[in-house]
Each structure stands twice: as C-alpha cells, then as structure tokens.
Length: 422
Image 1 (tube, rainbow, N blue to C red):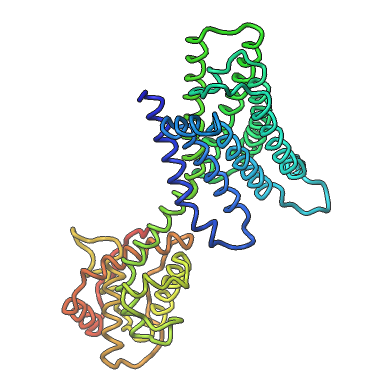
Image 2: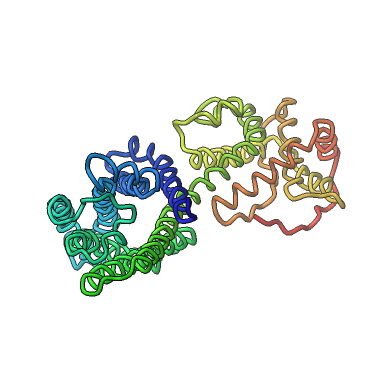
C-alpha cells in the first residue's frame, strides 16, 4: 500500500466521521432547517465517493461484473454531494426579502437554485450514457485518468463530470470568500477560510485534469508521466477534502467548546445556586434539584439555564439585603482582605453570613449595602459568579458566623478599597 492509498483511507474515514457526527442534527433537527440536511448530505455523499477511491474498494468494484463500477458510483455520489452543497449555499445566502434590490451574492444564489437541480440530473444522465457507450472498459482500470489518458471517450466522459465539479467549486469559492470577508466571529472566519481554500484547490484540480486529458488526446503521454500526474492531483484532492471537512467542522467545534464551558459553569455554580434557592424556594421556575438531575434536564438549553441561574442568584442576593445587618459588607471585605485573599471571597462571606442571618430568624428590614458589580455583559456576570461560587465553597459555617457576629456587634473598620473586575 502506498502513502497515497493510506492517506485516502484516512481522509475517507475523516469525512465519514464528520458525516456520522452531524447525522443526528440533520435527521432529528428542525424541519425548517434545510441547511443542516443539505450540509450533511454533502458530507455523506463525499464520504461514499472517497471510499470508492480507496484501494480495496475500487479494486473490488472495478473487477466486478460491471467493469470500472467504482468510477461510476464515485461520480454518482459526488454529483449528489455537489447538489447538496449547492442547496446549502442557497439555504444560507438565498434567503432575502423579495422586495427591493437584493445583494449580488443573493442574486447569484437564486440563479444557482434555478440551475443546480437541472444541471445535476443532466450530468447524471449524460455520465451514464457516456460510461456505457464511449468509454473503453475492456479491461478494469486502477487509476482511471492515467489508465485512459489519450482516449477520447474517457476524456469526454471525465470532461462532463469536471465541468459540473469545477462550476460548483467556483460557486462555493465565490460565496464562501464573500462570507469570510463579512464574518465577524473568528471561528467562522477560520472555518469559511479553510472551506474557501479547499474550493480553490477544487477549481485548480478540475481545470488541470481537464487540460491533461484533452492534451493527451492530441499527444498521448508516457505511462509514467500520466501516473505521476494522476497521483499529484489525487494528493491535491485529498488536501481539498481535509480542509473542507475540518473547515466545515470548526463552527461546530466552537459550539461544542461553548457547551463544555456552560456545563462547567453549571457544575461550579450549582452549590451556591442551590443554597440560595433553598432559602427562597419561590424564586426558581422549578424546585432546585441535585447537580446530576439539573445537568440531565434536557428540556432547557444549557445557555438558558446558566443565564437563569445567574438571574436567580442576583435576585436572591437582592432579597438577602433585607436580612443582612448594615455593617456586613464592610466586615466581609475586612475579613476577606489579606495575603491569601481571592477574588469573590468578600462576596462569598457576605452571602454565607446573610443566609445565616435569615435562617436565624432575623426580620426583614431595609436593604443593607452590597458590593457594586462591574460585569459589562451576561458572560462577564457568569464568570464573576463562578469566582464567587468557588470562594463560597471555602467559607465554612463557623467563619461565616464569626463574620455575622462582628457585623452585628458594632461598626466595622472602613472597608478595604479594591478594584473589582468582571
């Protein structure tokens, strides 16, 4: 097995893994979301096409009852995959109000929509007719292009397919290049940039192979040169599919990383949120449950649950102000000050002591001072609360009682001035 054959197995496996990974969202996602299904159809089609190019599969199919069957299956599945990716392009960029002047890329997407299905059907019919009529299949081939170099029938057959493939690659390169320039999110720019680069390779691949085949009809190359050219362009196509698969997966990886961060935030916030909700059971939408139960509530998205917990904690702290003694903030900040002080520790002392005050039966009164927060957005507020929750776990009940006792005994020392960060 050559290194090129090994790379073919690896890229086919990569595309298959991406197709399997994205299959649940495509099959069980929103019925109105055509984008996921179209993109998954592209992955699945190209995965099958890539497997037909691997050594074991192509040898078995090409030596079957239908000579060179691997070539026909590869081009069938690739054509369907290309139609799927063109449908994806239309779903992404073709949606725009009918009234008024549409941007250039939208008009282009609508043109693609009108032509893509018809071009795909015409390509499949023409490929089938040419394959069984003008292509010389008297002997099975291993490398179809190099083995049939100089034959006008195979050249005509491959030119039809390359015309369709090259046009689709150019469409994708054009649309994704525009999207890359317009994207403001880094992971989208990276992913779209990789996919755009892959499509430029695709254009170069189809143009070079088409020129090679037609030049070979006029001046038939040596067997060694044809095989070397075939291997070089095959290697370029494997690079194409690697960039396409990875680039299309970057946004999903970014979404997965965000879900992982939200999951960790839930784990870290749960203890603080649970105790506050136990103190104010009317606050949450649902009664607080164990961490395992909360993490398996799939009826609420993770980002919404974290935002809800942050709002619950903020509301509970606001209610606790009416049970906390006037000097609790100053005492908590003074207690938290020191060489081992950590961000959020003063807030943790305040919350723990205020909860003890409420639990001891302190009557509700006027709102006592609470530290001012400087988070500029929801993500910053969640990050701040995660730090407070981490510090909260280090404050035991005895120390909190000492803080509460000091706050109710009399005026505390002036609070230590610190700069809080989100």
